[in-house]
Amino acid sequence: MGYSVTTPIFYVNAAPHLGHAYSTIVADVLARNHRQRGDDVFFLTGTDEHGEPVANVARDRGITPQELVDENAPKFQAMGPVLESSNDFFIRTSDPRHKAAVQEILTTVKENGWVYEGQYEGWYCPKCADFKTESEIAEGNTCPIHGVPLLRESETNWFFKLSAFQERLEQLYADRPDWVVPQSRRNEALAFIKGGLQDVSLSRNQITWGVEVPWDLDHVFYVWWDALLNYVTALRFGRDGEDLTASHWPATHVIGKDILKFHTIYWPALLMAAELEVPTRVMVGGFLLVGGTKMSKSLGNVLDPFDAIEQYGADAVRFYLLREVAFGSDGSVSLEGLKLRYESELANDFGNLASRSTAMVRRYRDSVVPDVAVDPVVAASFAGLGDTVSRMLDDGQISQALEAIWERVRLLNRFVEEQAPWTLAKAEKVDPTSEGFDPDELTRATADLDRVLRTLVEGVRVLAVLLHPWLPSSTVVLLDALNVPDLAWSGAELGTGAAGAVGDLAPLFPKDRAAA
Figure 1 (cartoon, rainbow, N blue to C red):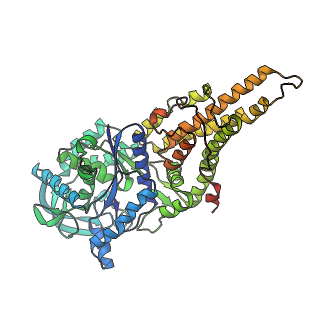
Figure 2 (figure 1 turned 120 degrees about the horizontal axis):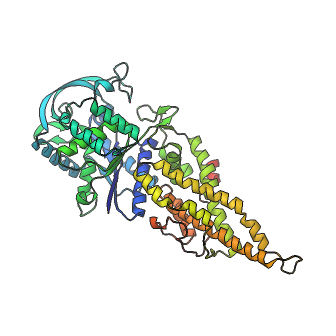
């Protein structure tokens, strides 16, 4: 089965920050989960390289736009491996193959009767590259996202008949109430639609850095149409020798709330105009806040993902962002918060659980996991967890799925303390010649210790399978130590793992990293 997931493509007028990493990690969690479920996954990310903001930065630096994007795009491409992103393709919208596909699709939209020439005058944000409606203008005639003054623009453009799709968009939202998640973002988009849609510019004639309009070479396509189409065009050439359009479209999109309008209103209307299916789902993340303000290149309050990963590792940063900030909501992030989560949850809760469980098997059973049934109470608490997590992920409940797994991490830690395997091990060593020796008690202690050790190792194994999308490197290390390195989602059920031998396991999350 084909499954396609995308990040927004990132604007290349500056270097990447932790906000870019956030959406990449979310999409990677989805991609890894679907691979575990046996799907043929196409995970797409990339860079948005056209438009006025890029041209302006290049002009201010005295270089060409192409030189600027060639300088910055590799920085975003390098972010993927550092984040342990498993994306299958990285698209650059300056790619000639993309540009040709954009021209082809938008020519089809024109031929279908949805494009006309007209005069535009209105307020424009040069940082958003967006013409603002009256409801989108902040106090002082500024952009509500960037806080910069809006510019009054007037030009002759080619227009897209967005207004003609009002009823079809309203019907889409009625027929598929979970098409946009979370619900608050769906309601926001639907309110915009119900407020009345106006036709929007398809082209610009006052800039030259963009994809040329093939029927009017004095114009380039408005950057948003060019950028949105990457989700479709990349399927044509993103896998060598294959066109994945038929098997992998429609896709699931992961976006930020600042680009909601384009992805949940403009984009489905354009696809309808081109006679293509709308996306499977649009998952909308909130803002990462630093000091109460959105992390933004233009505001300069960014955290460098490379610095955070160098100190704590990619798994820790991935975990922290999706644990600290519930996907879909705004949330504050800091290096102090990362350190706290690293120490309390990764090192103490999960890392210590894995270390204790394997160490006790090595100490009490010569590294061989007892081949007995798991504890029925623990098994009941794990029952159906894999299906629950998959459903949550498909519904965009990324952080809630992680919490569902972490409840079992805490449960197993309680299980260790309540069962006290070290006490059971002492009972096994009672001298059979000692006064009052009870062989039945010895038998019970042995059986109980076997049950506890088997349950702990099996529980840790299942947790590793479930947590792999969030913690890809450390879970592979753990599964290798358990000698059951199978990541298949079918193994996310307690009692299905082989009762073999365990190997040495170094600390998954060394505490000296947090102390540095």
